[in-house]
Image 1 (cartoon, rainbow, N blue to C red):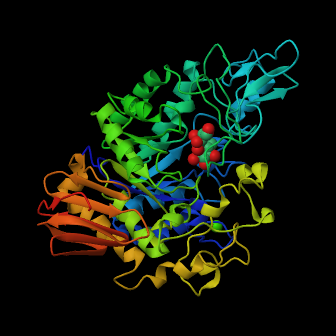
Image 2 (image 1 turned 90 degrees about the horizontal axis):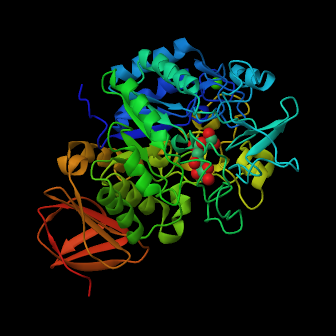
Image 3 (image 1 turned 135 degrees about the horizontal axis):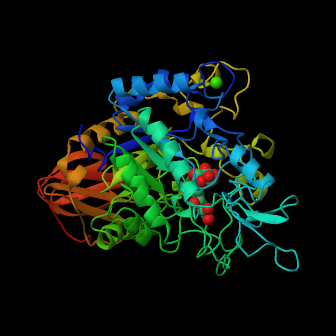
Amino acid sequence: MSEDWWRGSVTYQVYPRSFQDANGDGIGDLPGITQRLPYLADLGVDAVWLSPVCTSPMKDMGYDVSNYRDIDPVFGTLDDFDGMVERAHDLGLRIIIDQVISHSSNLHPAFIESRANPAGPKGDWYVWADPKPDGSPPNNWLAAFGGSAWTWNAHRHQYYLHNFLPEQPDFNFHNPEVQDFHLDNMAFWLDRGVDGFRLDTVNYYFHDALLRDDAADFRRKEKPENNPYNMQYHLFSKNQPENLAFLERMRALTDRYEARVLIGEMGESHHAIEMMGQYTTGARLHQSYSFDMLGPDFSAEHFRTRIAGFFAGAPQGWPCWAFSNHDVNRHVSRWMRHAADRESLAKQAAALLLSMQGSICIYQGEELGQTETELSFEELTDPAGINFWPEEKGRDGCRTPMVWEKDAANAGFSNANRTWLPVREPQRAVAVDTHGGEDSVLAFYKRMLAFRKNSVDLMKGASDFLVLPEPWLGFRRGENTLCIFNLSAEARSLPCEGGELVLSHNANVEKGALALGPNGFAIMSGNPTIRQPD
Ligand code: TEU
Ligand code: CA
């Protein structure tokens, strides 16, 4: 087993509630995932990342854990988990689990004990602080899902910190026992055979011990488009220097096992690129999962500056890029205004993402060209949607069930009368069984995944960006691969001599020109000479 299998690998994110329901209760589960693993092996991904499946009151859909060593009954049992891991390994797929340790559920026994007994052994496991003299919270830190990051507790006569919901109290990582507790829990899963962790909110573990105020708060009005969260210019509530030493302890633990991987999720921050580099340089994380391509920006300059900027700043670091996940609008919907049609955009995005330098995460359904589901307020389950409605619609629209068979009940996801989020049109229309043809989005993903896996240039080659005006994006990878994209809905062409098309869509090379139609792209070999468009 190669130790660095994860360099350039592609991980498929499964949202367990919405992948496959095996017991008919309308919610996806582990036996359902196990049934569908052959689909993922056939798709050609290297690993599967499961959003959280540990015991949880589900206030934030599993990102609020009440037992780090068991499976929530809605998803199954530890036996089901072991069965899934075994089946995945048989199929050559690795399993990466979400580890949500910055905070727990407020129903975790450690929090209940901490709250009840300030002088007891767990008294200091969470972040407790006295009120200001006027009774208000200790500082101005904001919670991502709205309001202050502090909630009053009448029993302790103190506030506790929660960067997300009040039901997600933050652990106090300044206490070494808290660090040990989490490392022990991670060893529990490593011993069970998981191949790695996606570390939720990895830059939130430590808070400023002096509890200093965060800087300017640009609240909801000025926040970037399509961001479902409360925004603040975080200086002290996260991104603390003490975190690096803890990540080194975590790496030392995983290095005791063979070929495991740590992928840290680093919430957007004013210095995200520097932090991503810092967290993956030296014996810390293997990959930093970037938020940079989860937003509205679809310009060539954006993609170029993110990728080139990362490697310029952190030549020893390693990024992980994604266009969609369970927290953001699906990219086909998000970028549709730059596209002529859904399919061309979906294929172009696949080609672009899967030709990038770094590792890649794709999100369930994107291989179908899936779009965001429109939901009514009554259908929402996500607190971010419920709290910020109607300015924001929250994250349920990207979490609706996977569509397998167009004409089956619940598109083959479940045989329940009612599923936790609805299955409807137009999502159903792009179900897996509609992708039989060679031209389908799914068929393109398979080709592109296979191409990447067999291309040393795409897996390991450096990126060298061409100087081209918008909306052209072009870069060479390694020795012999050129990737070029028309990021617009209008046909364009530029002078091009030599080279051969290897994989393309809406592309044509003739008479010394490369013509790319709406959202066209070309992956070429043979080092063609490209010149500025006229
Ligand atoms: O998301 C974290 C996340 O998106 C934040 O870093 C966010 O960008 C920032 O707070 C904005 O200021 C993860 C999970 O992916 C999400 O589903 C959970 O709700 C969240 O953590 C809490 O565990
Ligand atoms: Ca179920």
